[in-house]
Length: 267
Image 1 (tube, helix red, strand yellow):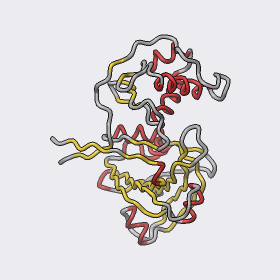
Image 2 (cartoon, rainbow, N blue to C red):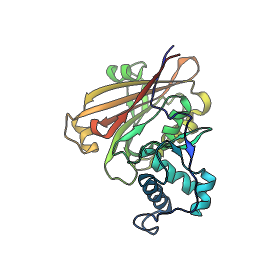
Image 3 (cartoon, rainbow, N blue to C red):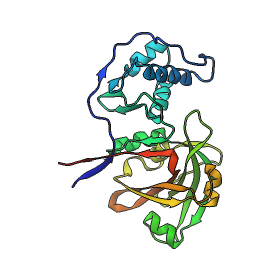
């Protein structure tokens, strides 16, 4: 079977010589949280060629020493670089520079299940509404389950780091028979934490489906776009043993806020 996947970073990439950062963080280190200062410094160093495209950033340990920062702070800064599309993180390889210019679009690179978990780790969502809904026929067909069931529905907004503009609207549906998912309105949640806390290792398969649709008026207001703006929709279904649907997410991006690249690997 031929696997289709989002563009994934290859194993190549030389690690650059490193020392103390050559450039100060634009705006000064007192301008906001420390991880944002480190993000600005690293992005500046990437743009100016200190870390060229296709080379590796210093390791997490090395970055901690360079910036005299904690692992958590450095990880958050690198996460911001990843979300901006400037770097990609590959297990066993390191953090590779992909481009010298930060993307204004949300970028995903997924080719394996661990990549999907990394994406879920980066997906910080602002909860707008939580309720139990009875699945109508059309929604049940979209989710891939029976109509008439009552499922937990979470309406959330995904935002890009350091930006107020919503990147996407993510609708989460969870089968209450298989989890005790509980979240609060106006809270920020991690999709990965939700998956790990309530489903653990029970997820055995993830199905992804891509489509396009005009964005309806209610969602358009949340995304701050005109109604009927072209939307890019990613539907993901998370299955457990025996093909039981545990969780589904429907994420809608305005067409100009999402970039999705794919590589087809032929055996």
